[in-house]
Length: 505
Image (tube, rainbow, N blue to C red; front, side):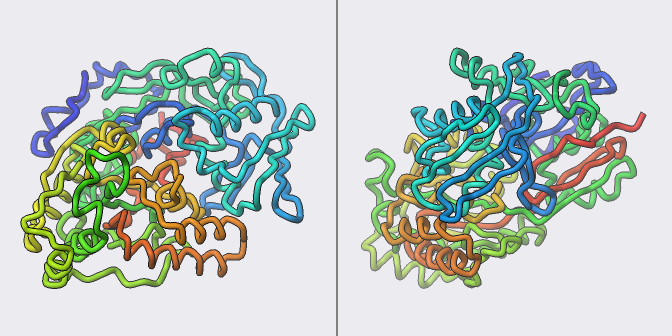
């Protein structure tokens, strides 16, 4: 059964998966995702949903534990030089890639250099401190850095540290068939329908994984995902809607797990990506963007859409982060918004093309925003599209304003550098401010929390003036799980760790 890309929350019962359609065995784990992942190449991937698949299929140089502390991955230990400009990693031996290639230091060098040089790589800004990678022994690799980089290790816990099989990667279409060394290997993908993985028999820690297959099923409508979970056709789903938490708690067959998230939802504004969509008052004048922000009642969005379970935002750092800046979220002020538009010489109504993902929650938020800002003389022209397409349009500059989120990273650099630095790989609006660039770079040079926090606070204050990214809210990570599943532990990074998960017989 193939899911339509746009599903109505009003008819979940009509869209239930059937047991026959999945033909799953008892050793199959079925995971519901809020959207289809984008390309399965760590170099160019950018969706939260893709990170679930990578987590099951690939290994990274380092990882994080439940408390967001860095722990060994493919690197069993590491040391920095006294000046912070050399990182030496000793690697795990006896690791095999899914195609039979052997993992070693040369494989690490190949992957890091690929991330730094591949056209279109979104990992370049995350690894921008890396000058070169040297193999000093079969299982020892040395990163020579241009400058000290306090954020580098945490970047290596994610896609920048994901290691692919070199030979398969060099000659194949990675996005169509990625070859990694994780506990599960790629089998097949049907766009907008499913991604199937199978157990990798030669995985070095195979005994910690208990499923023959893992199937990821993209279902954009949260109500439909929940309906499938309640019917027994999913075992786990991420993204339980706030309005559905009571239903999960009241179902004797289900369990609810949640954690304070590190991610946010915001409005990315195209201020300089191409010319077709930047010849607008919104792109040219910060006062217009400030007016837009002031016309939004963030607390009302939280109450109306999320039943008070989300947190209004004005920055990239959630209250769960020690780098959260103590700066009040602006209150809605329609009169001031109108005044700013007038000062900018804007004739109202000002129409803004607004790109929105075609899932019910995003649409509801967009409609609330549309009603709110109309009172200030701003007309939002909603353009609904599938989420991966939305990100493609953002990256190419085919948008004026777009609503997209970020799942969050433990280190603050991962939440802000790529989005606000001039050459940031995820800076889709092409915002550029030399002061912000300087502060972001200085924050990478020190590991002192107080110094970094002060620098990031300056970034937040300046960003709230320039408003290239209008933050809306921080998202908790809420999971629904069948009570047949044991061993589930929620992580603040929002990913599902498969190690230790099992199904009751």
